[in-house]
Image (tube, rainbow, N blue to C red):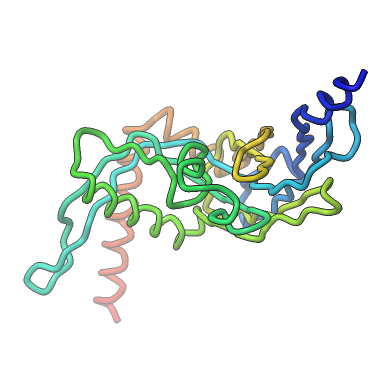
Length: 244
């Protein structure tokens, strides 16, 4: 009879996550959105969890292959130099935490769960020197941050009375369509106690969707059309300036 309550106290808490929007539509004039991720930390019986937990929320977009090139100055001009191909790179990554990540978990745990921009597992194709890989990976992360596609908000999660949590993540206008996964981690004493996931579908509609579908179905025609439009606009601009 004495062991039963002690066993109940040792059971892991339950995360009940939700998202303000499970469906984001990219229409013409889309300027971005704010995504609210919220939920509750409960014990298995549905009551308040018996301990205080830190919360980390991570939102990832669909992965993609990417080539990153390094620019170097040659004879007064910037030219392409070395390049690295990556097999699987998140098209979007945003993290919010109740405290700075370094105060919540150690580096090993952060690396296992990819908790933070320095711990993203970017997989280059082929063999590459570790120092060069670190340099290119840092450049890729910096580029995505400047594009608004990667972000980290420490102290971006508020926890009320040890039960309710909420975090607001901005979604920029240049996000890629696809399936986005939001994962919430409850952490105590540097250890991930439990986690839960939710999904967000980002899709295109209208003219943007028709253009994307046309580019996929008629890739050769789409490429020739794009080149033709570029040449035509260049010729028209040249004639206009000649007349002026």
